[in-house]
Amino acid sequence: MVSIFRHNQLHPNCVLCNLDPRTKLFSAFLIVLLGILVPSQYYLGFAFIFTWLFIIILFSHRSLGFYAKSILKIYPMIFFMTLPLPFHYSGSGNDILFSLNSITVFYSGLYNFFDLNLRSILIFTTSLVFVTETPIRAILKTLTILHVPKWIEAIVIYMQRFINIIGAEFHRMHLAFAARSFNMSLPAKIKAVAKMSGTYLSRLIDRSERSHLAMISRGFNGEIYTRYQVNFRIIDTMIVFFHLVMFVYAIVR
Image 1 (cartoon, rainbow, N blue to C red):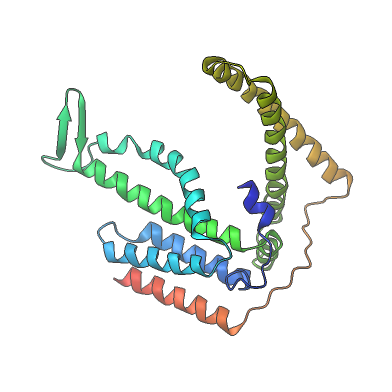
Image 2 (tube, one colour):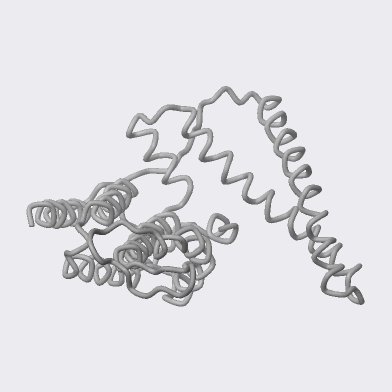
């Protein structure tokens, strides 16, 4: 995530990067909405959405390997959050897939597990493509045009700065730990990392407070200014229209 926000700049040779940010925001919103609303039994719809998302990624400046690695980094959290679902009864009648002692796996629970994982990957990938291919200045300009409350814009720009702070602080602590743990046993390393987590959190809070005070001392009053220029072209109109038609067709089906 740190590298994404550091390098999400405009790339002249990238088709997706040069689209109007409003086009990308609206299209990403419709794809995410489709990922939520499309019925689980509509397998053809899911296949089409994933295929279209794959085509969109081909027009980005990032490789497929980058998106695959990013998904694999976040997927363990999704997996462990949905892991109890196969053991939860949510069907009717004889819904047992297999039972071993006190462990029972249900068909409906396993179905819900795969369904939720599929939707989560779709939503996360769509959001990742939008954030990766849209500079932070373009996102702020879009929020201003859409008359989003100023406090939301302030949170976005502040989080972009805070992510850099997180990366810098983690790098410092990782170097310090690596220099002092070359001959430590695994249990000792685990114990040291557990103690370091509290220190890491307190340092982040302290640096966050100092960053906020620095912003106030420089006259920050909640207004976000950017000179980024948006240009809604014919290609943007065509893309928005296509996604709108795709959304309406999927909902009607």
